[in-house]
Image (cartoon, rainbow, N blue to C red):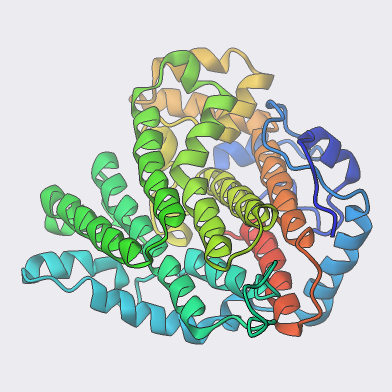
Length: 418
């Protein structure tokens, strides 16, 4: 298996096309009326930001991935979540048991988003469990002949622990974000800070992080500990970048992408890499796992940013237009500013005045900002799928099925409506 070397640009990938996915519609019936009125019907265009997020691919990728994707989507229609449903159920029970505390009020707060019915779809644990299965292949230079193609039960348990840790870090970040954003809803219900107050919400987040640290230490792997500790640092850095950005940084696509990596993609990318490291895989395989998680995370957040404009409160579980009302400028608006530089003046004035919000939405509706943000998400989804396609070949059907599911997840991420 020849691994890709060096870096290449997103524009080079764009010329190869994105044949594995159907074209998204250029308009959305859920758009707010103001945007729908002006929404351009022109075809999507390739991103206009710096091509700093890329991975050099085998030249045969386009044809191979098109066939691969047709097989996965049109023939088999795998449900990635169903493949690990049993493990997710066990993981959910384990998480609820891990957040038990001596103080009942703290335990109740920490468990708030782990309860049945509000636990979410467990997207990140699903990715990590599928990645563990996708890397279930002969280890390079096994220490003895007994390793073969089997991944031991102990290894799987350790990889499941990564999924648990990742989910605890993720939920802790949600609790802290809701306090910082003064949010009143999350996942369709009242946010913890709204129900129990800011102080308890912050303490519950801290408690989850402490539980995650204890679980992390139990793995006794210094490289994995370093990776996940860096993730927590990135979460704090990203949130600080969002709160303290200058006017120029506020309107910079490069700054936005770096912040998005810290706040969203670092967790899933480094967790995927940790899965590979625990499996004893090569540096190249670990890097492919990292690239999958990074690009999937970026695609996920870009679609989140689009849905903040095109979604509804009912579908998102939170108020639509929440970003712009909090003064957060995301990809659709940044792309709109490239077309209408005068929008920068509106953004600099802030969005405390509803008239500025309406004016900004009018410019966005006249621009191709939403289409271009979707297109950028598609490019990152393509890069994620390519990382999976670049893994060493395997004849194991379970491995192949898990890899197809990981590719299908990239499609689910960019076509979701909530």
